[in-house]
Length: 142
Image (cartoon, rainbow, N blue to C red; front, side, top):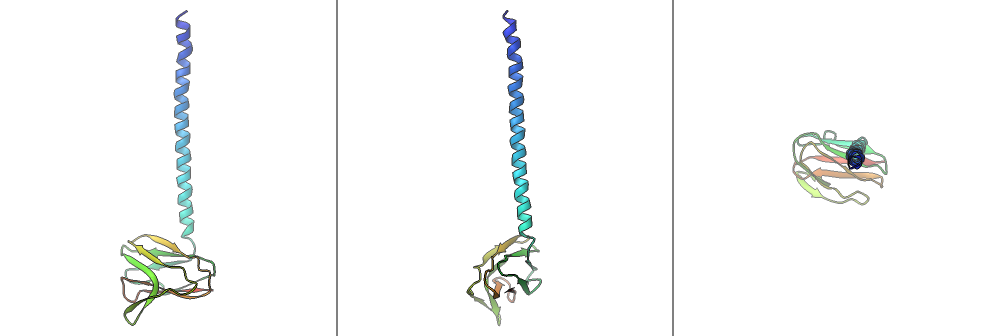
């Protein structure tokens, strides 16, 4: 008689262990799916209009976007850039905030990107790199 309860307890201990393993795997799957979804969202954010930066310049000095859009700034090289509102004029940095322009004050360390905007006002807006003289970008919003 004393062996019968032992036999009934053994299958219950194994079942509890399998449940713990199952719950652990389920939580791992949920975490993995959540992280994958976040990565997909980040990639799609950079798929819109973009301005790329080289060693000491924007690869294209101007970019045209539609009103209400954001702009991705992409540092394609391993060079630091500090991007602000304004422009280089005759070799002198002129910081200025234009009405309707989003405020930009971003530091890039190379190989990274950031999104600015949205640009909700039509017009021309100037951005520049405070480190590299002459590195200007004109954003034309239509």
